[in-house]
Length: 178
Image (cartoon, rainbow, N blue to C red; front, side, top):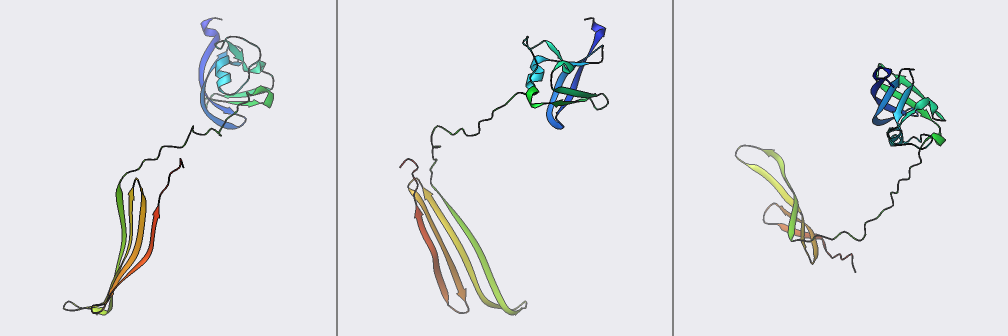
C-alpha cells in the first residue's frame, strides 16, 4: 500500500448509539472504507473475525454483524454491532477483602453543645430582663478499651435555681475478631 493510499484518523467512538468515552485509531483507505487494528477493535469490545496479529488492519465492513458511519465533520465513528460481533465481558463485583480491616484505636474526646438564653419583655441599655438559659451537652470519650457517651441538659432560671438532667449514658466496646 503506498503512502497516499490511506489516511490515519483518531475518532471518538460510539457503539450502538452510546458514547464509549474512547478515542480510537482508524485508517481511512483509498477505497473510502475504514479499517482499524485488531487490538483497537478488541479494546472497544468488538470481536474481529479470524486470527492475525494485533497490529493487522481489519476492514470494518468485513466484520459480520457490524455496520458503521464515519462522521468527518464531528470526527467520530458510530458503530452498530450485533451481540455476536461483540466481546462478552464478565465483571466480578463480589470480591471481598481477605479479612476484616484492622481497626485503628486511639485516645480522644468530643464535646458537642448547644447554648440557649431567653429574656422576658424588653431589653434596655440599663437593665436586661433575664428569664433563663440552658446548655445541651453531648460528650464522647474514646480509648482502645471502648467508647463512653454522655448527654445532659444544664439549665438555670431566675434566682439561684439550677438543674442538671442526665439524658443518656452508654459504654460500647467492639472487637470484630471475637
